[in-house]
Length: 482
Image (cartoon, rainbow, N blue to C red):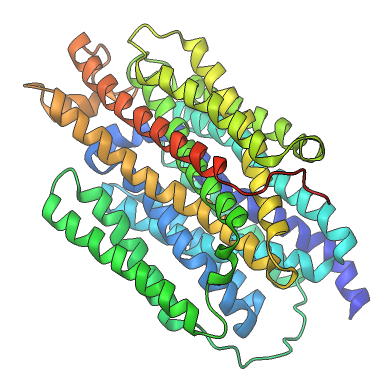
């Protein structure tokens, strides 16, 4: 059996690499296509749901699938995820209305929630502890590659074909992964099939997350309903925490959060992931709608951030060997606060090159801090909970992206409606894309969109200030010994 596994290992690792790239690129590739989608489907009012639907269902299902795989079998759950993701990609590309696109994106996220955590489990099946770190690092390069080439691919497909192809491109990849796993993966026999699923925890977490995002989305239109949903979310979170303390095998263990350093890492990763969506989604919108740059050129701004992210992540180890972790975080977050404060007051003549500089600063800083968050969270957790700690970091990052995507969309709509005066909302919608119906927007229209973008980056700066104080209170005041 072992020899058979070795002979198929290359096939399985190829499938894992492609699956990681396929699910992670789905965030970055869509950002540059977003302005074109908004104009084509008249979807400015619901634009944040294009990202939020995918991120929300991914966040909800990730911890659930991890538990189910231990009981029902990894290959079954992984294949289910790949098939669902591929179907969601196909229907996203075929969508002709905004509601259909949002539903298809949610289906994509349901599939991605199974694929993403199980790639790490499959790697553990094929490699021992000494080899595993190198293979995980190699697999992480698939995520980095998706961040690097995703915006360029998205821009190219939009400029040469249509926005539909940013979804169609994943269909053949999904089919290839399913075939490779089906014929290559030899699943180890499960030692126990009597796993008890935390149904109450899953239900409460799902209710909390759905009502939270829906509440955020409705703040701009139906404030009473939004407040009710947010109250339900808070109550659900409270009940979820209580329920997790009472079960023997909780979905998320409350014991981990008693360590203040662990809490600081989760909070930092969550907040920075939310800030990340600010420039990844709204830099392309700023450059396409106000500067009339092509989708490809606008996407290069996000690409520059990804390049610096990849490079800076290699310096995490040396930095931790020389400096106290929280001083590294405080320094990086301080620089980010300055950059977002500048964006909050930037005018219509703000230079294009400055966006590249700010994007690269973001990429370099977050590449260091978010990578460091994972290392420190694992180091702060008991040995038997290292895997759980890693999954919580991943969940926190997904939640940060999901919630803040909704918040940013709400802020943009509120600011536009508050400042557009007599300008029809449809005209604002049409000018968002550089190839949209309004090729020469008036100064008044441009200022309305700029006001909305200012609101987004002011909120990002506020988040960063909160993040700074969280790290200031981190009790870890020494260099971490490895």
